[in-house]
Length: 117
Length: 110
Image (cartoon, rainbow over all chains, first blue to last red; front, side):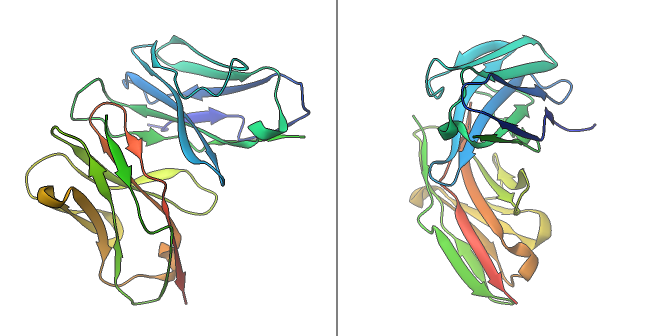
C-alpha cells in the first residue's frame, strides 16, 4: 500500500487566495483526520470523518476553513480566503476504524507545508 | 474526555545515554496508548502501541514503553540513544479519536 497520500507537498500562496489541500487515505480505512501543526500551537486536530461523515469539526479555526469527504478515497481541506496565520504543515491521517473501537492507530501522510504570504 | 500530558518539552542527551520520556493520561475507561515519532521535516510515524495484555510494550528501533495503570502513565524508554533518535516524540491516547500530547523534542548530541 502506498500509505496516506497528500497533495501538494508544498504550497505558497498570497493572502486572500483560496487553497485546497487533498488527501487520499489508505484503502479500507474508514476514518480520516485533518491536523495542523505549527511551532506555536503544536499538533491540532481540525476535523475528522468516519465513513465519509464529519464527526467532529470543533477544531476548525473559523468559517474560512471547510473540509469535505465525497467518497471513501478522497478528502479536501479548503481555506478561503487564506491568511498569513494559516501558514503551517497540514497532515492528513487515516485509521482502520474508530468510534470507540480499540483498533484506532492512525497512519499519517507526508503533510502539506502551506505558506501564505 | 481524555487528555494527555507530556511534561518534558525539550530533552538533550549525549549518545549512549538512557532515555525516559514522561506521558500521563486522563481517561476513565479502557485506554489505548501510542507513541509516535516525527523526525525533522517528516510526518508522524508509529513507534509503539498498547491495547491490552503485557503492560511492557516493545516498539521499533529499540524503544519500549510501560503502561502503569495506577499512575496513569505510559513512559517511553530506550537504554542507549543514538544521534539518529533526534526527533519529536508524541504520546497519544484513545479510544476513538486520538488525543495527542504537546510533544517532547529530543536532541541527541554526538
